[in-house]
Image (cartoon, rainbow, N blue to C red; front, side, top):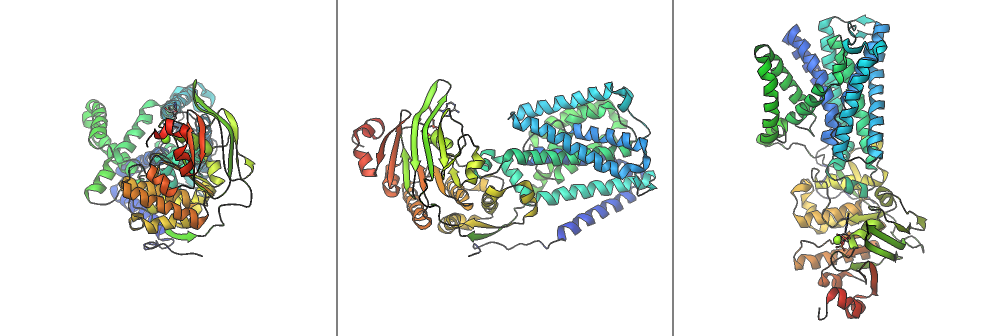
Length: 593
Ligand code: ADP
Ligand code: MG
C-alpha cells in the first residue's frame, strides 16, 4: 500500500533541468570572461581554481562539519603531480587532471581514515590536517629531484586538449568553464539526499548514528570527494600559473581559504565562490596601491566579518531579500507498511549482567533486562539513577564494561549505534535530537533511509521515500502534519519531541526506546502523548520502552513498570504493584506519593 501523505509532492524539478542550468551558467561565465579582456579573464580563471578549492573545503567543513586545514595537501599534490606528468609529456594534461583528482581523493581519504578511525576531536582534526600540510611543504622543499626543492618547478606547459596546445586566452576560458562546471556539479550533488545526510552529520551526528548511518563512512566520503576536487583545482591552478613551489602547501593559503569560505558563507556552495572571487579581485585591485596596508587590512576584515556577519555574506544577503539560505528539498513521502515488529517467539532484546561505570563511579551494576513481546513498559527511577545510560547501552550509543546484549537472538555486544539501528532498535534521546537545518519532511526522509544509507545510495536516490505507518500516524495526529516544510530548528519543543519519535518510526522499527518523551509538555499534552503512544503500540504491535517521571503519564500508558535505583533494578510489575512496593516507595515515590 502506498499512500501519499497530505501536503507533499508539490514541487518536482524536471529531470535534466538542473544539468541544463549548470551548462548555461558555465557558458555565461565563459562569455563574461571573454568580454572581460585578457588580463581580467586570466585573473578570473586563476581565482576560480581557488574558488573550486574553497568549495572542496566547504564540502568537508560547511556540509560535513569538519574543519580541515589540510585541503592544501590534495591541492598542492595535484599541482605537483600535474607539473611532473606534463613536464615529461606535455600532451598528457587531460589524463594528468584525472590523475591529480584521483591522487587528491586517495590522500584525503587516507587523512580521513586516520582522523575518523581514531575518533579525533574536531579541534585535533583541524590541527592534524594543518600539520600534515606543513609537513608536505617540508617534503616539497627537501625532495629536490622531483619537486625542484625550494624554487619549485617552472615552465609548466599550458593545457593540451586532445592534442591541441592551448594559448593563454583559450586556456583561461577552458579553466573557467571547467571550474564552473565542477562547482555546479557539486551544487547539484548536494541538492540530492547525500547533501541533506551530510548536513545531518554536521548538525547532529548522534542522531544520524541512531538512525542507522555509518557517519564515519559518510565523513570519509566527503573527505574523499573534497580531495578529488582539491586535486583537480591544484592541477588547473598549476597550468594557469605555470609554476609550483612548496609555498602551495603553506600557512598563508591554508588560512586564506578558510577566510574566503567563512566570509562568503559556508554550508552554501555559492558562498565560498563569492567569498573567494570578491576577496581576491579586491585584493588584486588594492595590492598595487596599498600593498602593506592591505595585508594588515586582511586581518581586520577577517575579525570584522567574523563578528559582524558570522553566517557569511551570501546567507546574510539571502536573508535580507527574504530568501531561505537553503531551500528545502520537498520530499515526496508515502506510507510504507512493514511486517509486524514482533518476530515469532524470539526475544526482541535481552541484556544480561550489564555493568557500567564512569571511572570509579558505578552507574549500572549487573543489570539484566529483557523485552520479549510487544509490551509497553515504563522505566522509572530517581534522577541520576542511570536510566538514560541504560537506554544508551541498549541501543549501542554507549559502551559498557561487562554484560551481553542480544537482539532477536543475535549477539550484538560491542556493536555501534548505527548497527543497532539497522537491527530495528530505534531511539529518542532525552533532549530532542533532530536535524535543525533540515525541514520536517527532510528529517523524516533522512530517517527512513537510515538503515540502507550508503553514500552512493544517497547520491542515486531521489526524494521519494516511504515512511513507516507509525511516523505517518504522528504526522496525522499532531500539528507536525501541517508543518512538514518548516525547518526543524524552528519547531516548538513539543513538536521536536514528536518529530524525533516520528523519525525513530520512519525506518522499519522493531523496538522503540523513548527517553522522557513528555519533558516540556503540559499535563494535558502529556496525557494526549500517552494516548497516542498507546495507540501506536496497539496498532503496530510495537514494543516500546519509555523512561518517564510523570506518574499520571505512567498510569495512563504503561502495561508494566521497571524501577531502577542505585544501579540495580529494584522492582518490576504492573503500575499498581510497583506503586505499593515498599522499596520503590522509599527510594523513588516517597511515602504518600
Ligand atoms: P538518569 O537518566 O537516570 O537521570 P543518567 O543515566 O543520565 O541518569 O546518569 C546516571 C549517572 O551517570 C549520573 O550520576 C550522571 O551524572 C552520570 N553520568 C552520565 N553520563 C556520564 C558521563 N559521560 N561521564 C560521567 N558520568 C556520567
Ligand atoms: Mg535521563
